Each structure stands twice: as structure tokens, then as C-alpha cells.
Image (cartoon, rainbow, N blue to C red; front, side):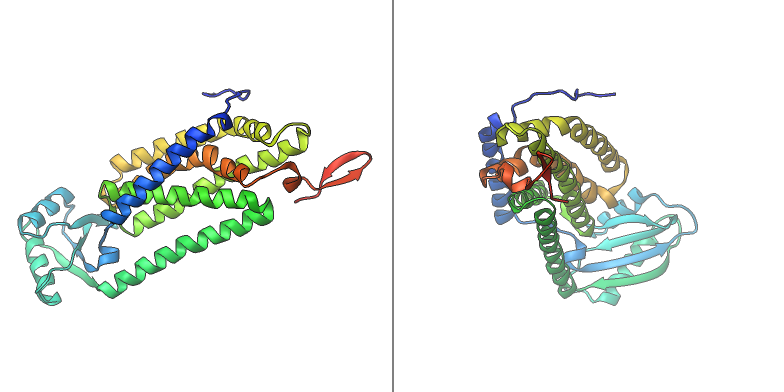
Length: 312
């Protein structure tokens, strides 16, 4: 079943200046939101307390959240841990209250439900640990981009590597910008979602780049714009079908997966849309703006009068 036929002839590069405008708008809006509002960091980055309790029978998470909110412990993240009897509660730090006293207060609140809770463990994440996680997360994003740039540069060409990394940076900034603007919590799950978006986006981009190189070899008299348009049209069906199926899966995860995976699935929802857009309109267009031409990708050796691509 195909929603988009294989023989499309859309003029993507004829509209590239419109795409430039759209890209600049979203990137600038995201940067402004990040600069003015910042990210709504979760407990993983700000510090706080993690409490694991077990009940004799299954407990509804909504009841636990309601009881905690009524006692002034707002901002709690509540989820099942292992089974429906085990409950994991994450709470932001409470100023002026000692750790032991705070954990006792939480246990008292949790015991106010229908059944008595048994404390399994209590962990505190200090601000120093949260700061270290922020730094490590930023370093992870930087090293991923550098690694991808080196790989694409060796596998294809550094003009394409530049376009690929700029497309990744576009996706990361847009995802973070949306999370900042709509004040979604940014925790380790959201960071994992951003890294997953980068992998998803570069996979789409590599497919297009591979077809660009193949078309440069086949379409010897075509201009770079014609070759790139042809490559994107050739891979359009695959790109849209992959994006659509993944997007629908992540939407289901967002609505039915529970609060624990909201930030992860939200990052993926925005990232899939942004990554699909960037693989079509950003990566190749920026490579073209860098002056990509046939000789950059096809190093010809004469063999029986025919050109042969000597790249891997």
C-alpha cells in the first residue's frame, strides 16, 4: 500500500527559499523561548527525593497524586515500579525541611490511603548531581553531532556532513524550543527522546544522501539541483511511510503510556515531524548552498570507457 507513488516530481528545491524562511522562523523562535523561559528541568536535573513504597494490593496512581497534592506536595511524579503494588514517587526538594523529616512526612501521606505502605527505599538527588547530569547531557549531544559529522564526511563528503549536522542541530533546537515554550518537563527520559530523534533524523538523511550519490552517477548531464530533486522524490514514499508509522506509534505512547513517558514521547513527536522536514528541506539544501557538485561524490576512474565510482 502506497500513499505516495514512486514517480513523484515535486520541485522541492524550487521552494527552498520558502523552506529557508520557515526554518529560520522556527529556529529563532526556539532560541528566543530557550533564552527567555528556559527549560522546565525535572528532578533528574534539579535534585529532589525518590521514594519507593509497596502496598498489599494494587493502588491507583491518580489517588496517590491527589493525596500528595492535597498535602502540599505538588509537582510529584508518581508511577508504578515493577508491579501495580509498587509505587515510585519523585518529589522536588522542600526548603527548610531535613531529608529524614521530609521522607517521614511523605510516608505518612502515603499511609493515608486505604492500605498501609511499606517503605522500600529513599534516595536524594542533590543539586550538584543534577548539574552534573545537565553537563553530561550537553556533552552527549555535542559528541553525537561530532561523531555523525565525521561518519558522514568519511562515508560521503564533508559538504553533505555539514548539511547533516546543521539539520540535526535544527531538530535539537526545535524540540528543545517546543518543550521550553509549552513548559514540558525536561528529564532524563526527554534527553533520551532527543538522542533518539537525532538517530531517527540522521537515518532519514543518510537514505537521501545515498540516493543523491547514486543519482549523480546515473544522471551525468543533470545539474546538482535536478539530481537532488530526483533523489528526494525517489525516497519520498519511504520517508513519509516510515515517519507516519513511527509518528502514530509515538502518539499512542503519549496518550496511553502514562506520565512516566510523556516527556520522552513528546520529544519524539516533535522530533519526527522536525526530522522528516529537515531531511527533505534542510540537509540537502544546505549542502547545495555549500557548493556540492558531481565531482565531490563521484571520483571517476576510466574502465572500458565507463565512469566508475571509487568511493565505498
